[in-house]
Amino acid sequence: MAGPTAGMHRHVVIDGEVVSENIAEHPAFRNVARTYAKLFDMQHDAAYQDALTYTSPTTGDRVVASFQVPRTPEDLRRRRAAIRTWAEYSNGFLGRTSDYMNSSLTALSAAEKWFSQADPMFGENIRKYYEHCRE
Image (cartoon, rainbow, N blue to C red):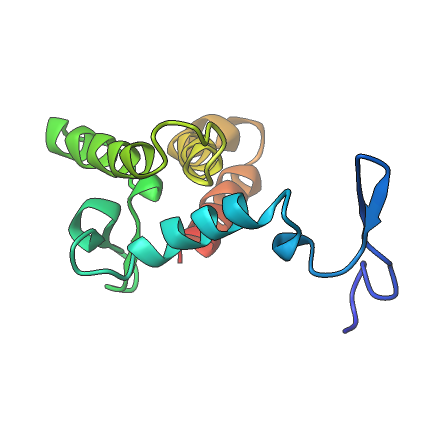
């Protein structure tokens, strides 16, 4: 695989043991790795899809609810429902699910005009990056 990490050997040290392959299968990490995988899978499960996704205004595809820019009280309720769904599934034990970073990027994109004050390109860049990540 080409790229900035090509040829790099990743490893984690836990209790003195170097783990460099199949880190997500190591007993110390496998349950949390599976929990995160389940959270992502839930977005495709009909029982959770309405709470966890919404229709992209750009493509019409289903995208993660934490990328929705809240413009109405209903938008805020949808975002809360998504966050609550993941929190309830994990019993609140996963404080850094991906929705926190999605929310940060969403907030930055909502400030497109502010970034544009320095240079219109900056506002355009944050919007494009947000849309790229959302899709």
